Image (cartoon, rainbow, N blue to C red):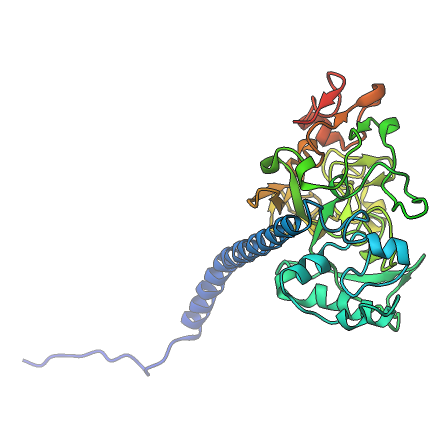
Length: 372
């Protein structure tokens, strides 16, 4: 019996078949890429949490060798800078916590050779660059550039180069006293008596024994001072830079009109003053929350709709780290020593609208509040 065989013409694919395969591959890539991006960000967030924890533990260890004194304070590691007006080879600003904890932990970096040499600007700048490039001090999701500021932004300054902004800040509620911001004689400056703003820290001094409940007090948080809605990130490198300098901020809870937290500005968050700006004005403002809280977003991010919240790491004085969104992180309990009276003298705490709604007791709904 004769059998008839049909043979396929040629051995390749037709154009239509190739186009179908390409379309399927493109679809798969479009489905996989967001997932891969999320996986990478989870990995970066995990590394950041580990780095933050290590830095927090170095701070805690420092206090053990310094009779409880906290680093990054004009009353401790920054005191010699105030009294001599000279760089000491360790702290490059009064509020610099990084240099002192690095030195006490045995880490060596540039600039230490100038320890007896006055305000050596070049040595301080070299140490500054080490802080922002050494992986042990940096969040891997931090790719934001900050420029030198001395009254105006100076991106081309010959000594203080533009570069990655610092990843982590301390709260000046823990590193400062209530002395006035100008200082007096040998007595270094504080951040002022804030009772007229509803804050009474009861004569607090920067010592780990005075902070209170360590598992509820933030020692380090993600953020960079200075980054606000109207200004691109910059840094003040002054030896005696006040109010935290480049290393500290009052805390993300703070908002009073145009004066607000310089390291986590929620001005453009939904429900806040800038959250519903018409599009024509948005060219003058930028949502700076992801500059501080860099580990993904919660809520809508489609065109024309801002994310409900951004995620960032907080390290606490007992050494543990938590991932919080930018509203959760404004809980005033985290940012003030135990025993602080908030909403004191019939003055309600000045904070974000979202913070008032989320934390009514802390922000004065029932009058004065004793921080636990």
